Length: 275
Image (cartoon, rainbow, N blue to C red):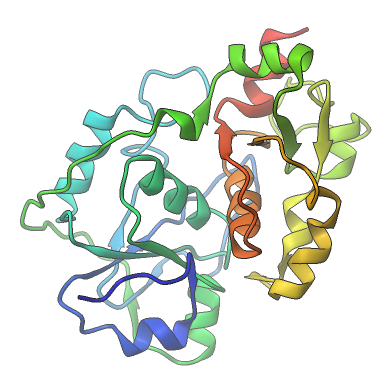
């Protein structure tokens, strides 16, 4: 059976495996006025792709903060609705190239499903190569047998991060822009102060991308060079837990072995709870 050998695959690889019976393609784009992450391709999908509603179906419904990890029960139920099985091979993409898709990749891994990859360059790269696409359409699927097995170590809480500002047992890495991290630029969320969490460092997620694709392994190694001798676990943070996953995935691509987790509430939660 086909297995995912890399957390990122090319359009060429995906096209070559389109007819694999276990392959499911997930379209993870959402339109967000906060990130201004809109796309001219938002009404187009890769042929046969299934819409993964990250904002609504795959985020905690009662949370005060955006795109928080849903319960394993909710995640499992929604995956089954999409026809996802335990042996499904998943490739996730978004209409911006690389933005939302790493969050979905990380969510599945946090829920115990490792046979998943992100499409490098996403929909723009697919369209650039004139590969099969279609207009977005709603569809129902035969119920899948996907079972979620949540890895508690994948996510850290506000209390964990607060305690870490004292213990410094882990290294907190913020994926937002340098200006937001330093507090010299306003946050996109109205009324939210800018700045950084104490004892954290800043590696903007944009440093690992070029033209909607991940940089080469050699270039990524340069970005993470400052961390090469760091033995602590890594906690990735950003504005709301989305672009933190881009940085986490990039660290996987260069083979960083440190334990990795995401502070799900990220700066949105921190700035509202620590005044």
